[in-house]
Amino acid sequence: MSQTEAAAPTARKHSRGRLRRAIGVLGVDNLSLLGALALMGVFVAFLSPALGIEGGKNFLSWQNLMNSLAQSVVIVGLLSVGETAVIVAGALDISVGSMASLTSVVSALVVTQGVIAGFGAGSMQIAFLAGVVAGMLAGVVNGLIVTVLKVNPIIATLGTLAAFDGLGFLVAPGGKPIGIVTQPDFTWLGSGRFLTTLPLPDLGGRPWPGVPVMFVVFLVVALVMHVVMRYTDFGRSIYAIGGNATAARLAGINLRRVRIAMYMVSGAIAGIAGVLLTAQTTSGNPINGRNLELQAITAVFLGGAATAGGRGTIVGTVLAVFLVGTLNNSMNLLGVGQFYQRVALGLLLVFAVAISQWRQSRAERARTRVAAAA
Image 1: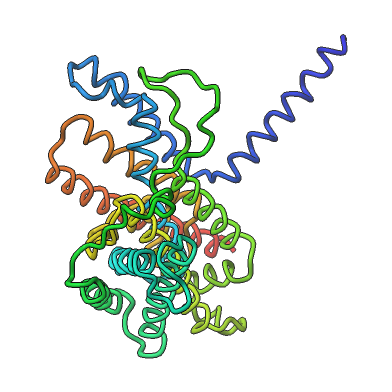
Image 2: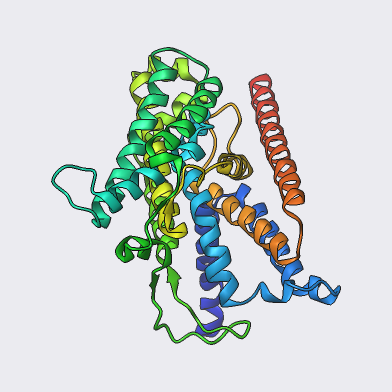
């Protein structure tokens, strides 16, 4: 036997090992999301033009992929990443869209008027920090209502959704949007690009435009949250509380502290989303984040989170965000009306929750069979 023939089984073994590791990181359940994403891309890019539907031919172009698609998933993606921690813990935060609106106004106020003592207007760093801190404080309010007042998370955040929405109008002078077009350093967060000099060929008749700054921010936040949820005591505590809160308490986990911190993290990430919304739209608008919570919650459940808690990953959420973003982008390219898009998004949420319930039932049946066999 030649050395080449002898090395072939070893090479195949290493290849299978790398494949298993990749699937382990991605998650077996998330393969279906990748398949759905690929099928949607193939339909829009290739089948729809063949069927005579205009617009689909523009899907595979740098203009669409790096502008329309990449930037459209950022805000919903950030809200979804923060929402994942809350839902995994067996709770819900319906107020993330209103928090993004409120922090949008706060960051615009700081960057245009320098409302923080000792800092003048125009400081992008201070405005960014102000938006994040405002989101954290809003998250703490949610956490205290749920843990101290013991209000059901759905009712609590439904109330704060309205409260934060109204507060955004009260903070904005006259309840009107605050323009920031005169702050180029801040608007760079929404329009800036990285890696513009990469020697990539044209795609769809468009040159390579670079990677949007806000898309990089989203990826960094998602990576940090993935590490936190998977490799830290805080992340493991969230999974433990979602799986069985009583057992988690008996194991020494401080339920109140973890839940408040969980809402605070979700609020901080919603604050980042609000800041980027301000930079992207060049205004701090009290309605910037309105109705985004529906898309965020849909992405989390579609990504594999369980309605009862204890299950869900950042990787699955990110893939689901791309799926929802591609669906919205595809419907825009194909000329689907806005009201039809809302119907499709609502049906997608119902479908995602139904899948989550089916997974929970399947897992429960499996545990029952194991217990019976023992």
